[in-house]
Figure 1 (cartoon, rainbow, N blue to C red):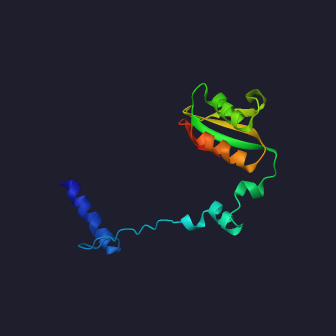
Figure 2: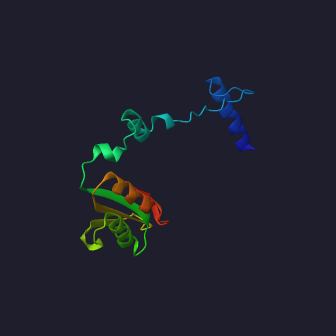
Figure 3: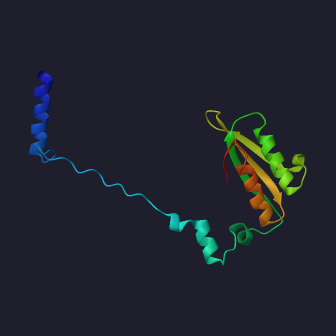
Length: 140
């Protein structure tokens, strides 16, 4: 009983200060969805540069291109990712530099690979091969 009286008193105080109006419902908050599909930076770059791909214009080849791959932590993940890229760039896997870092909870593993790529097509092929591995969550 005392709880109801306290609640009623709080409602009276709120109404007196304009925070609560009996019988009037609060309007739902309008949510605006950010649609930046027309402002995709890669698509914009390609439009503005006569369809040229980003890696064709912005990177000089041949080069050691740094690729970061994040995936489920398993014992072979890092060496498998290096081996995948080694096949694409046609270099021995033991000659490709890489480093690893585990996530805070140990669920994921980040592998940073310095891939010796000869062309933009080869670089795009590296990303395509990485995306096809089901253990890969993201390749940057």
